[in-house]
Amino acid sequence: MSDTSMLAHFEIVDRRDPSDSIGMEYCRISPDVKMGKDVRVFAFVNLYGCSIGDNCKIGTFVEIQKNATVGNNVKISSHTFICEGVDIEDDVFIGHNVSFINDKYPRGTNADGSLQTEADWQVVKTVVRRGASIGTSSTILCGITIGEHAMVGAGSVVTHDVPAYAVVAGNPARVLSRMEEK
Ligand SMILES: CC(C)(COP(=O)(O)OP(=O)(O)OC[C@H]1O[C@@H](n2cnc3c(N)ncnc32)[C@H](O)[C@@H]1OP(=O)(O)O)[C@@H](O)C(=O)NCCC(=O)NCCS
Image (tube, rainbow, N blue to C red; front, side):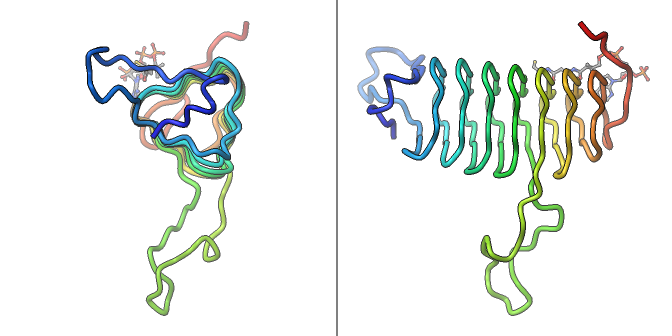
C-alpha cells in the first residue's frame, strides 16, 4: 500500500492505464524509511528501515531491508534484493535480479529444532563503493567490498573484494580487465 503522506519527498511512478479502476500503486514503504528527495519508486517495491539518498530510481519488485543504506543518484533495477548490512554509495548502478547476502552459513533452525531468529546469527556487512556497477543476476556474497567504479559482469558470483576500477565476471568472479580512471 502506498504511504501518500510521504509523496512530497518522492514520486511513486504509475505506468498503468489511467482508466485502471484500482488507481493506486502497490508499494510498501514503511514509515521508518529515510527517503531522500526526488526518488522515483516503481510498482511492488518493499522498503523498510532503510535509508535512500536523493535522486535515486528504485525499480519494480525491489526489496530493501532495514539497516541497508543507499546513497545519492543510485539506480536499482527491477527484482533486486538488498539485504540488511549492505551499504551502497553514491552513483552506483545495480542491474536486474541482483542478490546480496548477509549470512555465509545460514540455518533455518537451531540445534533444538526451534526456528532461528535474529538473535541466532550476525549480519555480515557488504559495501558497494561510489560509481560501481553490478550486472544483471549477480550474487554478491557477504563481507565484500566492491571498489569504486568497478564493473561486475552479468551473472557473476562475487566471492572476494573487487578492486576499484576492475572489471570482474564469472562464478567465482575473476578480474577480466581494468576500467580507465577518469
Ligand atoms: C563484464 C562485462 C562488462 C565485460 O565486457 P567486456 O570488457 O567488453 O568483455 P568482453 O565482452 O570483451 O569479454 C571478455 C571475456 O570475458 C567473458 N565475459 C564477458 N562477460 C562475461 C560475464 N558476464 N560472465 C562471464 N564471462 C564473461 C567473455 O566471454 C570473454 O571471454 P573470452 O575472451 O574467453 O571469449 C560485460 O560482459 C557484462 O557482463 N556487463 C554487464 C551487463 C549488464 O548486466 N547490464 C545490466 C543492465 S542491461
